[in-house]
Image (cartoon, rainbow, N blue to C red; front, side):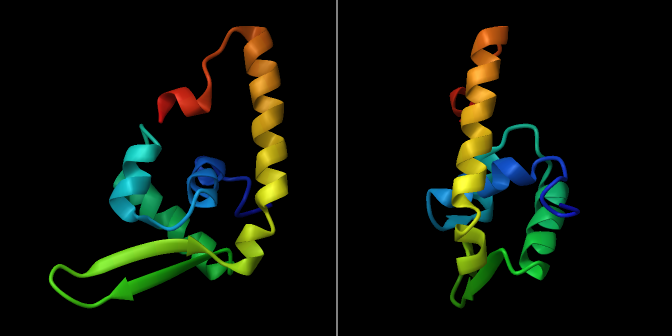
Length: 101
């Protein structure tokens, strides 16, 4: 919970549930999240064994992030939290997370 409970981590995981992403793709998927904080959260998730960082040589260097098996196992948890949020946001008249993407 020390890693998963931090701000923005849920949205970062949600974006990776859809597949491998580059840093810039995640940055645009989560509006309002600074590059510095995104980098920090990705590093924490990598250290926890939830996210894998893959560097592909070439020009320019391509860095991709993907969920590990441990990270994919969080899928039902992340989905349940998303569904919970959708249910209660709808009743409060708050916009959807997906609407922001």
